[in-house]
Image (cartoon, rainbow, N blue to C red):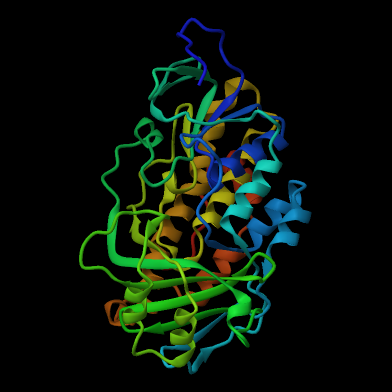
Length: 404
């Protein structure tokens, strides 16, 4: 980081994005596309993430196509033609949707594709944010090495443990779900006959096992969800024990046991989310991605909601004069917060269903039908919603009934 700068420095004309994960890079790509100057600050010394898979729905696919990144996105990804097919623990079929479930990608590939969409020099590495202070003219970013930066506004994309969040809202600690996940990748050629045109979800009491293809279907991404007796550190890269994973699913059918037998390495991941926040924007600071809506993975919407955040921000900031910056961020909150918060709670609901705890939902008359919620999630027009928030000051429509 450049040694630095005091508060008398020339006011920046850039918007600062804090974090260079999927949410931060997507936001930077979208803003640059509509002519908004952006600088991304990332605490890590290098871009890239531990290998894992990401399932992407319609809005995410459209994001890459609309931002000139469609070719590498489709070339590196996998098509899940049959969608997510659900099985019992013994391998017997529960449900096959019979329609395309979208695309799936290796997380590291997504990071690289998004990086290609940025102008050179956009990302500053080794910049760990401590705090954001705002005034009438802009924001001051304070970093761990003592450096400071000025910006017109700040977009916090720094994850579930966000330092940016404190500039917007007071929030408690992350909520531990009582579950953990083993995840990783297996070369597809190790599993003769395993279908590469579907995501496969095996569900049983207190645990479930998910597999879907990534990287041109040469790799199979797996996630084994199991109970955790103690809080497990939220991480994408804590080492896991394959033999412990095998014990968790030892009584399951041959498909799952045979798959686990082919695993050579796994990471362990504690499952945390957050309660919905009371605000996603305040003044010149707004939140995107897990900083705004950290959620459990059961709805496969964490990354997808981040792409929607980026599209909404770009739609609202495009062509706006500087004096309307705060208004645009307020409109972003209106366009996105209710929807993102709903999806957070819906992901919790799906976790109960997948792990055989439907009884906790029994008797509820205020639950929207899953099929209705799924259609609403995947059919959402994020740009139209952002424009409506600007024109009317109304929040996004929600499906009837509570998600949990």
